Length: 406
Image (cartoon, rainbow, N blue to C red; front, side, top):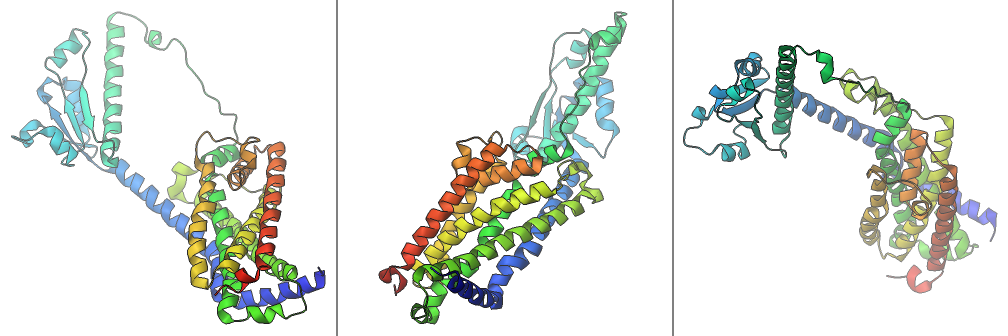
């Protein structure tokens, strides 16, 4: 096997790949523009919806409202932008629970008989509140009502304490002061770092997908695979030349995605509308983190390149290869969601699982809590898997019944 032949094949395939607009779109345009644009739109829509729900007026129905103490009644009626209070008289002959389920209003509050008297006599009592947890507006209304009720309950307790000439401090014998020792970088990495490896792995796969289909199945469709076979190079040299091109585009796509996401986080963190998520957006990439992510992307791109090239060589046409790759995308990229699952920690067993280990390594690298013993274990397993996949692609390329499968 001659490096000169491999280099010649590599340069030739790189030129052909650069001329392919589809490859350039998947490898560069999409990671640079599509992903940050998509994430920005999602964030904006999400925050806009949250703010709209928080500021929306909630329609609540209070059954037996006459039994409410005047103080609590006035609190609910005071801010009309917070609550629109109705009673069962507004829904004559209707089942209030059914009306709640049909979104006629957001909350149903049932006040028991003699509720005010029970408060005055300091007897135990309670109020039933029904809401639809599956509806954001109803859940938000419940949260607002709970705040009002809690304030009223605290006032009642304080009045009882004062009535007995007891210090209010008896209600709070001690305070708990929580002090966060984690940096904003660590918090951001734990809360939001899971989505970064998913997009990084996805763009790495998409960047390698298009050239892999073109350099295998595409050669068959164009009828140029036979011409390559008579060139003064071995099958293994052809495989390596094509393999390195596919791997390069996958790496470049991943790096472009990482760069664009860095810009995205800096932009979103400075956006006034994102103040509520400022802690989650406090993600910064130092040189050590960038180096580690780059080092992790290389074996991942190598695995993707070998598997995609094998499938492309096996397929009769580019259309057939796209069908196989579409399913493969689901199988290979889905494990990247492991970084989003709470409680999944990196250990020696997880470090041996492809894609899952990469997702967690990137997540912990962003959070600044990486443990190198697991990183080394993951690297060894990834490079071994990449070498095995490349060997399989080479053997696949050497089989005539596969190479000329029509």
